[in-house]
Length: 534
Image (tube, rainbow, N blue to C red; front, side, top):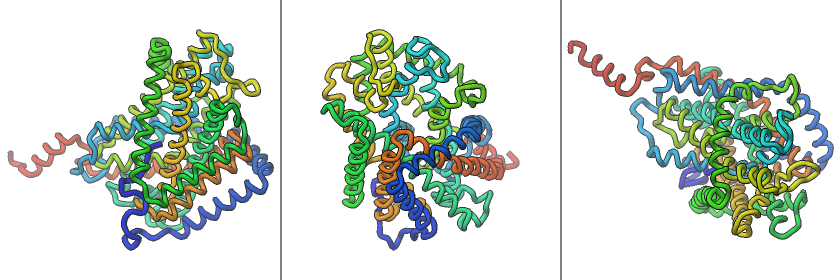
């Protein structure tokens, strides 16, 4: 993910002008995080077993709720954009956007790129090709390839960005139009009143910190696993080593801490933007030297499959079969996206002041989804072509596609492989550092009452905590451990997200009639009120 902070960065300004640290929110969240890391380090096997049991119960009992709520976010976003509420601005009625449409879209483009797309860009389509979703096609067949892209588009398309849009919309509306602060609890004023700043509100912010902590730790854990796969591809050893993955996390977390304490925020921002451009150039390179016509056909065909099959996929719960596959893929994704909503929501809210709800929803859902579709069509489509048409065999581990190595083995089939593999490893490492930086800023903001430039010590603490949680989860259960915890943490946070939607709707219904009019019609009504005799 891209950066969240302003050029001034964390720690900008003097502490005298900052909001004080919320001792309850930070104290409780920090204590629980430290206890979790200590328990995982001391009793990794016990943690793995207990969390696996909890995951089985959660997905079996509430998998349907994840599916229903995720679809509900998309429907709610469409409703807000299509009705009269679409004219309401994120800010006062006379506010104007801070950024041009091109700059605004460019920043969202960068937001759509991150460790997740690097990790799953090749791995997910290849996995679904060789193990068809819910056994709906013969493994390795053209039908399985078509399904693989259809479900990859489903997992990375409108659903996750609808979650980000609705939550970002709620944060932006209450922060910039109502002045209730840049926190999750601030969005609950219509439901909780003054209690939003008291015990119930503090509990909401603590849960939001935990969701961000485990969501970002999952991304960093995936990045560490893929870096070990890349190092193995380059040097011939290291794949599958938990010790090496933990060492990677330690080194990259140290790099993050050094960047945070040295005050090189402008450099990190530049690095983040450069990384997004480099990733785009990598995709363009594969598009040009790879099976260009096959990629274009994959994009077009998969888009049609996705749009026509979306209603059925959106409400499939696995009650008639396929529940295990859904919990490992779809429900994991929905939980992961929910855990990222505080970070992504705050970022897109901050760059969207002055935009209307309709503009916000259309662009936030549409632009990053198209970026994801193009990315998977290029990288995933190239890998599918290699296996289906070129006789290439993907890397396998224990009878399944090797998720960590698949990107690098695919790049090996194209020119300049040594350079592109090294570039991919570097990209993932920089995404790790900037991702920890950005998520830590959000957790710092939530720990300091919504302060846009939280104290540097808070940012460093949450960055280290994120790396520690990622290391503990990898050590205790590998990729499965990462997936398990993010689903468990997202469960209670999902209820908070639903509450945010209810609170937003309550506030929107109280808006004046003029606020829901288009700018031209609003000016006409105001003119008529001013000159009633004309």
